[in-house]
Image (cartoon, rainbow, N blue to C red; front, side):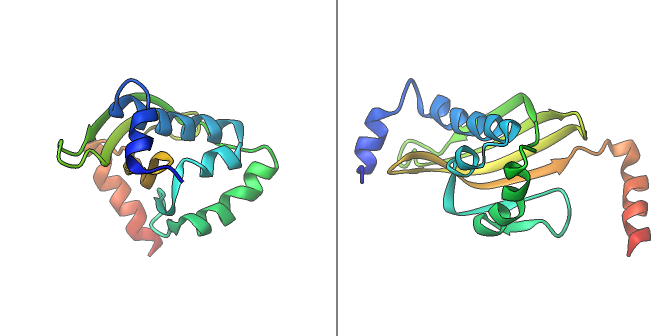
Amino acid sequence: MLSLFAAISILSASPEADAAAVIDRMHQAASRADGQEYFAQFTPDARFIGTDASEHWSLAAFRAYAEPYFARGQGWTYTPRQRSLTIAPIDCRCIAWFDETLESASYGQVRGSGVLRLTDEGWKIEQYVLSFAVPNDRADAVVQAIKARD
C-alpha cells in the first residue's frame, strides 16, 4: 500500500487536475456502462445521493442498484459543461469539493456536486450528489407537483 506521500508524488500536474480527472473518469465509465471503472472512482464508504428523495445510498447499495444496468450495457451520460473544484487549504490538501453543471439527453441541464478525499490510491469520490436544476420561475409548479404525490 502506498503512503500518502508516495500517492501525492506520483500524481500528475496538479491536485486540482488529478481530482477533476477522477470525476471525468466516473462520468466516462458511466457512459460506457463500465461498472468496474465507475465504482473504482469512489471510496469504499462513499455515498451517492440521487435526484429522488429516496436515493441516499451507500456505495454497496448503489452498486447493487446500478450493476444490473451496467451488465446489460446500459449506462448514463452526463456531459460536464462547467465545473468548480476547490482543494482544502495548504495545511491538508487532502480534501476537495466541487460542483458542476452537466447536460443529459434525458434530463437536460442537471447539477452534480461532491467531495473527494486523497487516499493512498489517489483521489477518490467520497460523496456525489446529482440534482435537477429547477428555474426559480418554475419552482412553485415543481413543489406543487411533489406535494400532489404525497
